[in-house]
Amino acid sequence: MEINFQQSLEVAGTLEELAGILTRVTENDFQELLLNIRRCWEGAAAEEFLKRGDTLCEKLKQSAAALTSGAQMVRQTAQKIYQAEQQAIIIAQERKYR
Picture 1 (cartoon, rainbow, N blue to C red):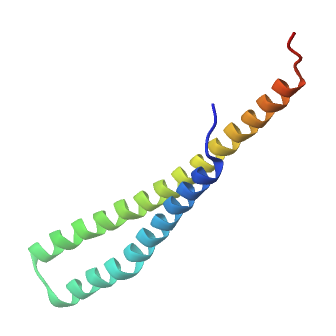
Picture 2: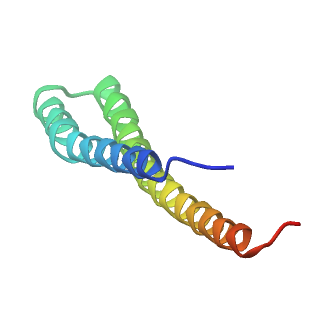
Picture 3: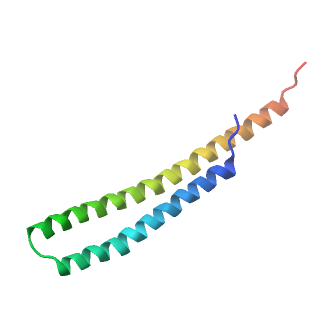
């Protein structure tokens, strides 16, 4: 069994990059959008909409954190598999078959 260690690290990097983008969009653009809506729209419907917007914002932040966690898990798993493969190669080389 052999994994492409470098490719796994690239996937982890992509996940972290996506998490960063999602975090920036959530903390900057989405928050600004909600702030503008608060300034322009009043009433019960506005409050309900903004409450749902805040809930969505929290879920987006949780998703970004999950992507970061997933990237770390990919890195750790790839490293463990890589180390196991290297150890298996060493063991195979040390064996003498007759």
